[in-house]
Length: 442
Image (cartoon, rainbow, N blue to C red; front, side, top):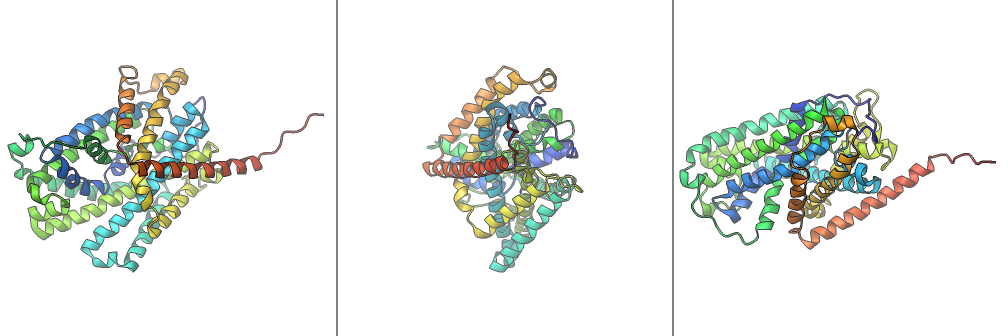
């Protein structure tokens, strides 16, 4: 918002609507699409595809709320800006820190899974040497692509998206012939003992879209581009999951679904060649998720640096490439350490919970942002109909889903948040140390 955060004119607005959509799409579709169908079908049975579509429609309330929030801002930062504007720097930092940690650990986890998928095709990748070299090379390549320019980062994401979606579309088109009326509209709906836990599992298909809001400062006409791209992308992802899961439950008998993946569906439809194509698609799917993470997450520490919640080093714009170069390097190094050490695993249990907490804080900030927006910002904003009905629904939905997280996940989240505030205090002391004392009065 212009009244509190001036726009950083040194960042190039090189991201258009397609770029925002690609970033959101790849943040949402990573390794999950290859594991969730089996995990959900094991609990929900034949109607699983309708469950994904239904939760996708529920999730639209979350996306719509973010769409309005993003329309008030032209600068980078996303959730950090929203909560810092409404509640001050401490809450803003806590939001940004949880968001940043969840994305860094997701990158580390996904790059390890990517090595595993490659190992199923070429065993060298699962050897100690192969795994280390692959993680080093891939992290270095993605870090370099985003260090030298945001357009190169978007081009990298577009390449991964093409090779991810084409095999998925082919799988759907090939598998639709196996769909029957009973599969599309099953007459039997199994009893679900833990509906909340199942929703918590299924929601993994849709989280991650908010990463696109962190590049508002590099988006052309963000107040209009961002809401439209977010909404259309989430709808597209919901439809994609619906069709993928419909094919999954149509091709694989109920007794063979547990522990199966889309590779098994590809093998059933087209033999070893089908399995190979889907395996390669999994690599590109995870690769696109990694590329989106590498583009979006550095903008979080960049925004924290601009807001003086982290040292100014994080908010330095590269004089030649006009990118947040230091923040890109920081994320690359952190992800590399996490992926090679394996220490990121204890964070995985709390990753989804930190994302839900971030959502709740963002929705709680909307009343203050609406109230304090300038007349120009109000005129250009994507204002939701019905007052606070949609944000309140999204707020309660996140609370309900989060209530089904385990105690261990809450404890890990609390520990991570405490560690983040230790770093915050260190940063504040460094900032005060470089601020000259005001002249004394005689």
